Amino acid sequence: MKQELLKKIEDKTFVVGVLGLGYVGLPLNLCFAEKGFRSIGFDIDKSKVDALNASTSYIKHIPSGRIKAARDSGFFAATVDFSKMNECDAILIAVPTPLNKNREPDMEYVVSSCVAVAKHIRRGQLVVLESTTYPGTTDELMVPILEKGGLKVDKDFYVGFSPEREDPNNRDYRTETIPKVVGATSADGLEVANKMYQQIVVRTVPVSSTRVAEATKLMENIFRSVNIALVNELKVAFMKMGINVWEVIEAAKTKPFGFMPFYPGPGLGGHCIPIDPFYLTWKAREYGVTTRFIELAGEINTAMPSFVVQRAMDALNEVGKPLKGSNVLVLGLAYKANVDDDRESPSYELMRELEEKGAVVEYNDPFVPVIRMTREHPQYAGKKSVPVSKNHDLILISTAHDDYKSIDFASMKVPVVDSRNLVKNQFPLLFKA
Ligand SMILES: NC(=O)c1ccc[n+]([C@@H]2O[C@H](COP(=O)([O-])OP(=O)(O)OC[C@H]3O[C@@H](n4cnc5c(N)ncnc54)[C@H](O)[C@@H]3O)[C@@H](O)[C@H]2O)c1
Image (tube, rainbow, N blue to C red; front, side, top):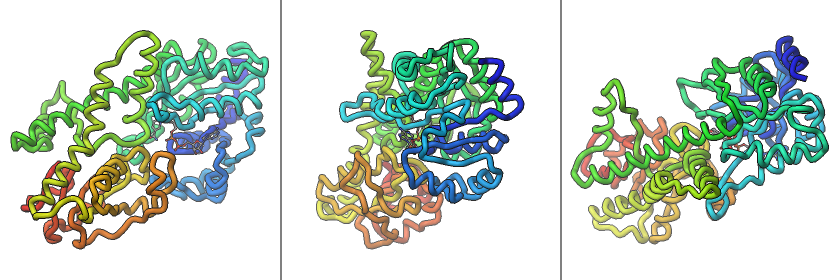
């Protein structure tokens, strides 16, 4: 089985299927197609599949032209027909791994996609999970589902885990230039998975087990979460002392060793940093371990929206207005600059807290013209972005989109609360938060 798969990779007859065509799965699929491997994308969302087959992108930073080129090459097609998995030599799973209401891992998507793979799995395939998850998922959850049909792992098919390090809209790194960690349940499986990823990325990093690969991803994101919490704490302390934390960071980062800059903000956002650390916390409990650093970082980071709302109240106070009844414009709904991804965005928490205190809240985001229905914020579904104007009582900058850099906030004569250090010129109604 191993030799056959390695040969197929070498002569490029190896077919790659990707399950879940989102921010992670779509670029992954395109990378294989661009390297001349037949690539099939699977998703349960027919609208995404139809859009891709019509060469239309639904992700801002992935141009439709890139999809068109992949479609025209004949190497890429998307489908909702999971029976086509049979045509694939590898199936890579990149589905969501959110938290449930109790902030515990919600493995629903991973389980349902493994069930779908199990229905179609055949001898001689490689299945790799790419979704971020707790150590042990591949061994304990995925393999038993895949083996239900009677085939045996590492005898009939291989299983691996290779975490995604996608950073949407990162101008310096893209899928191909980010080294990829690869783990598998056997040495043979690892050899095949490693060789497959070598076709699309600059460097692979094979590790001794799927657990090490799973833990690596969590360590990377926990590192970010903890450091962001630290800088958020420093922001609050320095602000009280009249010190601009962003200026401190700029100065500190001139140290050529032993320091790495992290930036404060209105709270954590996105699909990874607010969520992933709790996958480890949950699993560690099974081993009687309390992850205090992670919990503390979570506590500090989740307190940030309230801190920013307090600054908004202070800012309105300066012009003799209460928050209750004031019209507040939240500037930026995406969780980070220049992307259209609003998942877990702290802007939602800001909107919720402002409304709870009686403010009338509107938002502006050129990349999120209308808020789609989500299970986290159903109350905002259908709400539309409004233009930035001086008719608001307060403007609260939550996302530092480049488009906002040219706005002349000073001339608007309304208080501006800036939680991203977007506004560089000082004016009396500017409040950093
Ligand atoms: N977005 C990022 O920047 C990023 C970075 C690194 C890692 N990750 C991780 O990658 C994983 C995927 O994240 P994403 O941002 O790509 O999610 P996403 O929501 O953008 O995409 C997931 C896709 O999976 C599809 N899907 C859901 N259930 C399915 C099923 N049973 N079968 C087939 N398709 C199904 C959805 O329709 C959707 O298109 C998560 O574990 C996430 O933590 C994300």
